[in-house]
Image 1 (cartoon, rainbow, N blue to C red):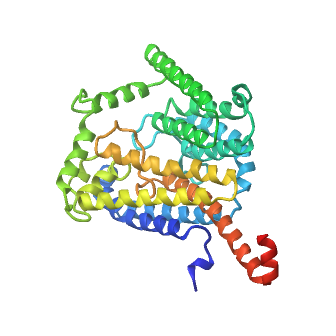
Image 2 (cartoon, one colour):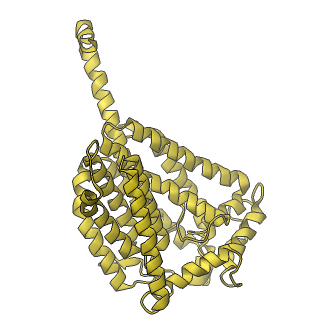
Image 3 (cartoon, rainbow, N blue to C red):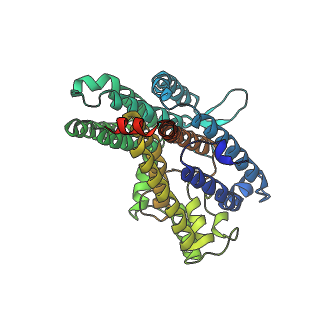
Amino acid sequence: MKVKNYISGDTFLWALVIILLVFSFLPVYSASANLAYIGQGTGNTTKYLVKHFGHIIIGLGLLYAVHKIPYRYFRGLSVLLIPVVVILLIYTAMQGTVMGGASASRWMTVPVIGMKFQTSTFAFVVLMAYVAKYLASIKDKEVTFKQSLLPLWLPVGIILVLIVPFNLSTAVLIFTMVLLTCFIGGYPLKYLMSIIGIGFLSMTLFVLTAKAFPGVFPNRVDTWVSRIETFGGEGDADTNYQVERAKTAIANGYPFGVGPGKSVTKHVLPQSSSDFIFAIILEEFGLIGGLTILALYLFFLFRLIIISTKAGTVFGQLLVIGVGFPIIFQALTNMAVAVNLIPVTGQTLPLISSGGTSILMTCMSIGIVLSVSAKRDEEKIQEKTKDEEMNPLDVLSEAI
């Protein structure tokens, strides 16, 4: 029985996904010690390993189901899901669910099953598919800025406005990826510059408003300012705590690591199984392990580029870029935070960090990418079959 008979799309991408997911058990099992001590007081991480295993199984199931859907259907689905996403974001903001001690209203509780779900991550995937659909529809057409305001920038603006107060890093990532996708999709550069200017002015106005009326957006702007001050070396002992512990973990592991499960810093580093899991990887597997993970993500990016360039339609190309590239950007952001290259953002390491929403939405995005790849493979098989069935005179006629 060949596995290839049951899966479609780029085999190398499938292999990379499986490698990263299987590897994730080691750092998650080890780094969950902090959560185990805080939540249970026992230090038993088995519960968190089983939970992570469950998330991976569901994620793979979702990936498999999505990659079997012809990618052309995501055109219509993205349009239908935009209003749903807006409603979910409003509901999440009003519900105000707190998870893991975070003060931001980022999660909603799914009825009946009681699962926590981060709606902004789902909104990210849907919005990028929608942007790809719009850009494909205007390809080779003359479009004015005014004409694109309602169908393109209004949905983008509404979703960003609903996410910014509670999850700035995700909003910035979404905005960046929308701009990148628009640039690659041929949207006029002069209009993009206008959007960047509008975004900068809007963010400045938001920060000033939040500072003038602190009760409107509790703690969030202060948190951003604190993180920037910490990155600049001006934070106090409390705000520097995570960064200093991450540096300690990296120093302990250089260059070959202390060994799987032997991290000492995991006991004192908050979010060691999610936001700062790369620091634990560097401590336990050393520089070699860290570079290997980085190489896997870069190879992941290479496969995305290959799939995009070989896609048969403009929508397929932009869809791969829109939903696939954010996975790599998020991974690089997580790594950069762990080694103190940029301020703390709260972004997880895709396919490795613990967290149900992160794993599920990453798997959904990869499923969409594989759907595009699978369609290309299907077309190649049809072309090969056609060539085999044609006689030499037919082949010559086709060539002429």
